[in-house]
Length: 402
Image 1 (tube, helix red, strand yellow):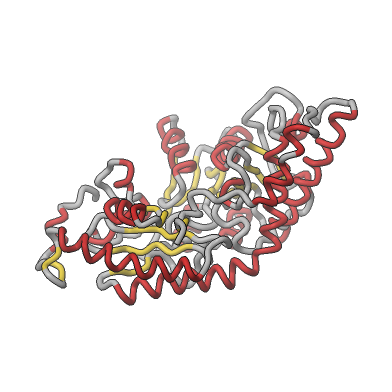
Image 2 (cartoon, rainbow, N blue to C red):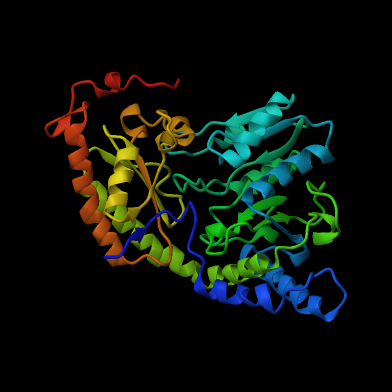
């Protein structure tokens, strides 16, 4: 069997139809859309069409609410820094302990600059406490930023409800929806969400293109200043080919969203069930009743995620680890720590994230391969004895985090 790609929450294959849509904008439709001659006309129309395609996917009220950026990280930073600039007397931000580093790293930076950051904890299933959130809302808070779905576990947060609560308190609301857009239905015009971030390469568009949705009437200050592009809200000559590609990817995502929530979900469930039934001392993390249809994060106790990934790669299977050990750290990821996953399991979490390009045949092949990899690694583990863990493996782990 050919190599099997199950790391779609990291990046996705660019759909061939997206590539086809983009190609003319490298050679034939190459004009600058800001120019006033005929070389610009077709390019401007391509951008306008793409803006409409994004609008339709996320259910925005108007295509003017779509601002093209370079990536999800730029969109995240723009949203938060804009809210702070527009409300200089508000010095607090509310977010969660399980956000993507694009949010958490910026918040850490702002904290050093004198801002107060409220990080909402999660329970063992990765869920937020809405009552605790309510108690954090005040007129000192400039913005709430909560991801729509977690990139490691797939857990979906109640952002629509949280946006309503924020607005009742007079607070702006942003969501990093990078993992959610194209996987679950959205209708932003029926919500109080002020800003939302999208990254093209997470939904079969190219890398280097993103979107910031900005609700009409929301307070806003640009991050990049210069030219008049994007109605003066994001300076810089438009990345036309990638914008057109993202528009096509959004159109295709709309066509496949039912498939994502039926067939892709069925493959995910089969994979998860097949592995856990065959591998003792393994379990899925996150909120299993409210998560993205393509994501499962499985913890394998008493072994290291990095070793699992290396052997999966050798077998032609691409996945990723919920543990930061892949970057040389001995600590599990901040998401596993926030969920208080036991030390014996937090080091061995593997995220499998599927797409519409996967097949049941591939899933069955992975189910065949994984149990043998785990069994062989446990034979080498000092925390495993024959067919069971040692008497007190948690003590042997000597955890490095509080």
